[in-house]
Length: 188
Image 1 (tube, rainbow, N blue to C red):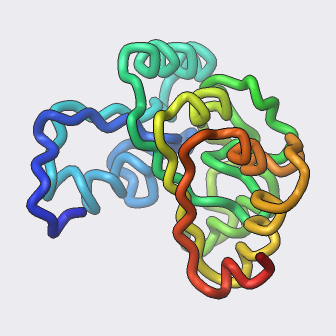
Image 2 (image 1 turned 180 degrees about the vertical axis):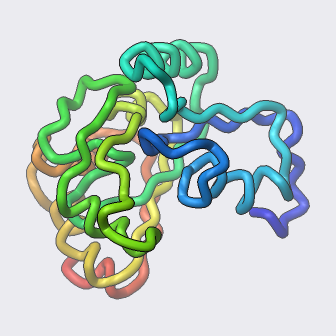
């Protein structure tokens, strides 16, 4: 995207989630990641990310729902966790959830520890768009790479639709594209 000729200056970016307790300047915050990987090279008209530093996290989640109400998501880009989470919507998250504060599971903390100096530095909470918010997008593209995602991809595509595999709800979305490498697609 960064190397394309596409002009993003009239587009809005509404990000999926943010860790609780990391400042926007922290190198592992999604604020910093998006700035370094996209926004600096391709400025948007306006960019929105949840406020993981808010004193009142529940209010910050509600405020983010207000942002989502004002900005219809044309394209939602997702990854998937090895436990089937999308965003930070961990197994058991209700399909009707809106933006909310999430207690991250041990598997998510472990998976994300590779980005931090130690596992103890990985935040244990995040603010995430809810599953209903994600499903409201007009189009969804989900990327998955590596054999550690193969079980989750199989359950998402071929398994029952269940809150225990949050990504399985995507079976009900009218316009989803999966971009997978061979390892992630191995069980399909």
